[in-house]
Length: 277
Image (cartoon, rainbow, N blue to C red; front, side, top):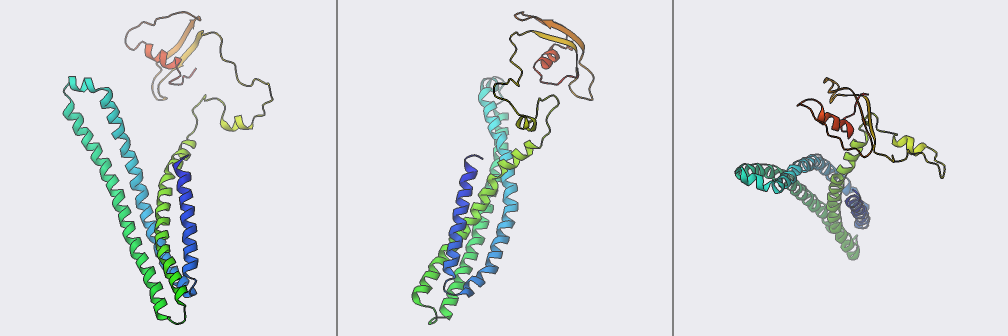
């Protein structure tokens, strides 16, 4: 988002500026040429909007199916010895082919849709050139040769610029997917006990030299008083009123049968799961 999105916006603004300039110069021969561009540009917009609805969804699905490819590749590299020891090469190979085929199908579908757009834009570009050429030929003698040449030249440039504008809009819209994800994460509610919110921190008036944040503890002592914890609100308590004092520097081992709460105690200690009290 910090590097690709600004570049796409820059390219988009450049192409839009060049397209507007080419439009003005190509219509210099007669305002009727500019009037004839209006319905053609509406067709351009309809084609681009129709393509954008499909391309955005395909690109999003392609990104979703790309993640399992990287995950499986990393899992295979880290567990290569285990896979060979249990002779699971064929299973992992089949799984890899399946997820790669899924991602490749969407990737090729996206590029096929891009070729679909390019073909339609080329056809519309031919229509623009035909309209300009037909008008200049039908009004020969009224429009000078130099003006006709400039108008036809910039009409050719206009068709190219319009295609680049449509492609830049598509790339910019796809790059905005990262912004969409950030906005989605921004709307997620904070967990209970997460500390002060961003609004409170930005709105607080901090005096120079004042210590508004609690200092880091100097001793590593741990104290549990009536610790109660459950993994989910609908599940029963796994820790019921645990009282524990561990002095700084002590090495303590926790023993017990299966289900006694050894792992749950570590989960509470590292705040992996919030506790009730």
